[in-house]
Amino acid sequence: MTSTMASTNTDHIEETSVLELTGEERRELEASVRRVATGPALVDDPRWQARAREESCRLPHRLSGAVRAFRHDPGVGGTLTVSNLPLAAETLPATPTVLDSVERGATVAATVAVLLGSELGTVIAYRDEKHGALVQNVVPVPTLAASQSNGGSVRLEFHTENAFHPHRPDYVGLLCLRPAHEDQVGTQLASIRRAFPLLDKADRTVLAEPRFITEAPPSFHSADLSSPHPVLTGAPEDPDICVDFHATRALDDGAERSLARLREALGEVRTDAVLRPGDMIFVDNRVVVHGRVAFSPRYDGNDRWLHRVFVHLDHRRSRSHRPGNGSVLA
Image (cartoon, rainbow, N blue to C red):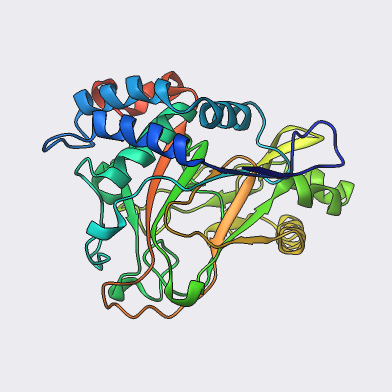
């Protein structure tokens, strides 16, 4: 079943998009997963990645169509959720609690994440984040509890993923393996396409000027700092957004006031997504900022567990940052 909410702006295809696979589509996708997730394969092996890219062309027709439509235009809401994905839940181990947790093996869940990401674009990673693994775990980590990171459990501020980086992801994919206790943890989302009409002309002008800088997030083992940059770029009437409300700093008082008003506008249009096992949400990182509510993990092996993948549309654009023409950006 496909669920959509129509937008009043005819330039945008839809406000939200949810695709629930039928039983037959799920079995068809399972067959693709089995063809790729065989033996002691490693997700980060270029030969495995090549097989996954080839197999991604064989996704169920309706799923492939939804992904391609989302790539063409992400809609007002800027997200696509696919549900009823095949996961081997009965064999799922305890939720990891270690620093820099990643999924190196070609498990069923990791393969699902990469197959869908490969249909959308090219799955990439960053050398300074979680050792450059293509499939990363989003889990609560005791030593990171108070941090603004994917391992923290305090409220995570709205942000563009890797906003400081010149080649930040075009899309972020989150696949739910295990839900939070009592469904208490939601991914918070806010689309600039919905917030933009709430900004006045003066703030729009300021936010489109290079009057902001952004630091690297705690998950990066580097001290990178962006050059001065605008928060809003692209078409004046339908801009992209690049901001991290924990790490982006205005360079003058006027820019600081406009940034605060942008934050308020995004808060007014916020939506929450609670993922369940077998749900995968893709967030257009150019249109949507995301965050997370605060929660209280138990660290008992049953905490929330997501797989995360990053996707680029134009792989060639980042070539100078990818040694050996691989999938990991330096």
